[in-house]
Structure formats: C-alpha cells, structure tokens
Amino acid sequence: MKFISLTLFLTSSLLTFSQLEFHRSNEIPVSFNDIDLVHAWAGGLNSTQWSTIDLNIDGIEDLFIYDRSSEQILTFIKNPLNGEYVLNFDYLDSFPEINDWVLLRDFNCDNKKDIFTYTSGGIKVYENVSVNGELLFTLKSSLVESYYDFGTDPYFSNLYVSSQDIPSIDDFDGDGDLDIHTFTLSGLTIEYHKNFAVEIGNCDSLAFELRNRCYGMIGEDAVSPTVYIGDDFVDGEYCTFNVIDPKANEDIQKDGVHSGSSICTFDYDGNGQRDLLIGDITARDMVLAYIDDRGPLQDSAFAIENEFPVDDVSIDMHVFHAGYFEDLDNDGVRDVILTPSNGTESEDKASCWFYKNVGTDEDVDLQLETTSFIQNLMLDNGTVSFPRVLDYNA
Image 1 (cartoon, rainbow, N blue to C red):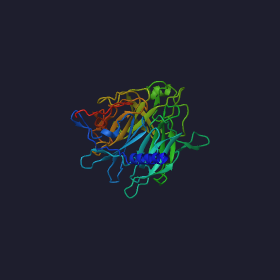
Image 2 (image 1 turned 120 degrees about the vertical axis):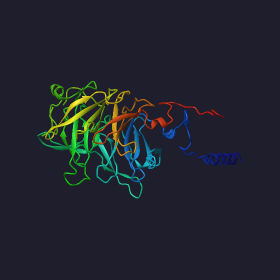
Image 3 (image 1 turned 90 degrees about the vertical axis):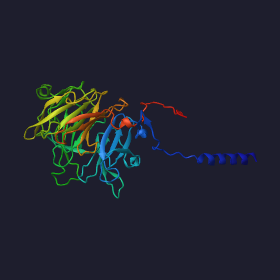
Image 4 (image 1 turned 180 degrees about the vertical axis):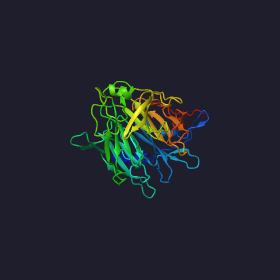
C-alpha cells in the first residue's frame, strides 16, 4: 500500500512539474534614461563581425552579426519603411556552425549572400540555396583551394587564412567575381588571390590563383603594428620569393610569426583603386594603405595613414580591430563599421564605431556617427556579470 501511494505521489508530482513551460520573450519593454532599448534582450555585443543578407527573402538586405567572443549569431530584419533594424531570432537555425570568423558574400552572382567562414587551414564556403521564402544553405567547399606557381611544379593547395585573422573577400579587380586578400602564414605580408570564375565563363566557381604573395609592397613588423611600404619594405627584405609575374612588385618575410590581422578594402581616395584598411592584434588604431596602379599589373602602396581616419575621429579601442564595408543606414551607400576582433578582450558598451559614408562607394568620405551602433539600444551589464532582478517600483 505504501508503495502504491508513493508511486501515485511521484506520478502526480511529475505531472504537476511537466505542466511548467518556459518560452523566451523579447517583447518585455526596457528603457534607460527615457530611451527605449528596442534590442534589450539581444545579449550585448563584444567582438563582432558584420555582414548584410536578405534573411526573409523580401529583396531587402537585413543585418547579420557574429560575435567571436561568445560564438553567437544575431539577426536583424530591416524595416523597409524607416530603415530601422528589428531583432529577430527566427533565422538562427538556418545558419551552419560558424568558427572564428565569417563574411557573407555572393560568390555565384545569384544575388544571394553565401557564407565564407574559417575551417582548419583556411576557408569553408556554404552556398545560399534559399527557395520559397525559406533561408537555406548547403556546403559548397569544405576547404577552398588556390593555384600556386612559384616557377617550378605549380600546384593546388588550400588558400590559407589564420583563425585569428579576418581576410578581405570582395570584387577587388572589378571583373564581377570575388577575390581574396589575406596575410601570409608568417603574418608579415599580404597575399592576393585572384578569382578567375568570370574569365573561365562560370560565375558559379571558386577558381583562385595566387597572383602575388607580397601585394602592394606592404610589410607588417613581426613584433609591432608598424607597417612598411616602398623603400622601407624593400630594405627590410620582406619578400624573399614570389609567384611568376606577380600582380605587384616582388619583395616578404623576415624572421618571426605575427598572427592576428584584418583586412578591409574600399576606395578611400577615389583614384579607382581599392585601398587596404589593416588592423593588427597589437594596435589600438588601424592603418590605411593607399594603393596606386604603378603600371601594367603593378599595384603598390604609395602612402599610409597610421591613425584611420585622419579626416575625422580616429578609432581608439583596446587592441585588434576589423573593418566592414556595408550599407548599414539604408541610404544605398556603403558605410564603415570598426569593431574589436579579439575574442577574449573587448570593450562592452562602446565597441561598434559606425562611420557614415557621406561620399560614394567609389570615393569614401567618413564621419563618425556613434561608437556604439545598435549596442546602445541593448541591455548590457558587462561581460560575466550576474544581474539580480527586483521589483524596483512596486
């Protein structure tokens, strides 16, 4: 009898507890100093990477943010009426596992952003195969390769990108397909991998070839964020070997390994040549290398700007930043947002420096709008904080 009573009691208790269900709600309003925190429950932003993508397949680019520090994705739908972003968690399950860094780019000319992310030894690509209004991705390449020709026995091998770096992936030469700039294995010079997809007549390809492993005659010091160009680059013997007929002048590599760099490309001076914005793991600021076409197939940095941007408030945050060239304010012109890229150290509440582009995509003119873009509308009590909830106003 006792056994039966105990069984009934436990069963009744389990039924009672099983009726308790919890659902996440992002609708609870939060305000601070009379400002509505419309993204209050996003969780805050630390070391973020930014891309745009049409999430709900309505023809409007929405916002994708990956936080390296928490390995979390946030998605925001853009309101077509006012251009404001609305936090939405419905699309998170559509994305595959992301590691270390991610850039959303359309590689196959179908106007749908694909996924470029880190994998051991380089880059993994997922193709956007969304249909019938549903966001879908499928694996395109588990490890992107490039063609290497140093004069003897050309070969294909992985296109190397460090897990700590962030490469530039864009149509650098303006021929309609995506090219890649990334730091070499030593971390001291920049490789330029040209995509020949358009040349071979198939945009749905990842046909890369290393055209220069010493691009722009730009060398980064092994132990500091100092960048060398021109004669300083040549005298430093940065480029000990290169490919046949390189895209830029020869000359990389001295002793030491320097991992932790980012590259973002855009035409800052309007000369028709994309310049390189470089972040370094040891620097509070960022360096802009101005690129000029010195002759047939010859690109070289002719000047550097050590505190970018010099024409406005320069970036000044705890070390290692990355830049992202995206239209974030819905005016049809791409802007620049600078954020920390260090996964373990970043500022909690002022780590999204948004520079509005008041120029054009082809002649960028930046003005700092805020140091806390979107995150100033979030509830963030600081990393590893443990807030307590109380009834403050009864």
